[in-house]
Amino acid sequence: MRGRDSEVISACSRTIRDTAGRLLERAQQAGAVRADLTAADVMMLVHGVVVATERTPEQADRLLSLTLDGLRARDKDAGQDAGGNKDAGGEPS
Image 1 (spheres, one colour):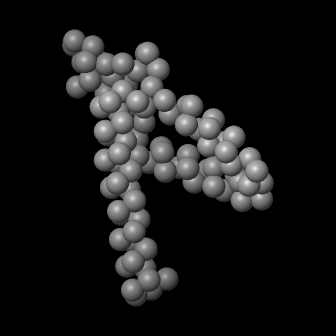
Image 2 (image 1 turned 90 degrees about the vertical axis):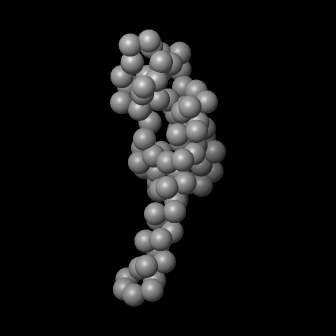
């Protein structure tokens, strides 16, 4: 792709990545999702579900549910930063 189309796609891609990053940060601060997740992880997982269900759309809900279950925070995630490191007080750094 060249010209305007590639510029539009690039702008959309940046917007999606930036928005995913902000949403993920808020979810991590709220303790709703794993502290070790990155926006790139979420984007790859979503892409994987989309590709995996192209020929079996009836599996989309099940795969998305499994993916979301894996993203949710667990007790052991409390007090960790995005790299899985604890600060001195056990609070996210």
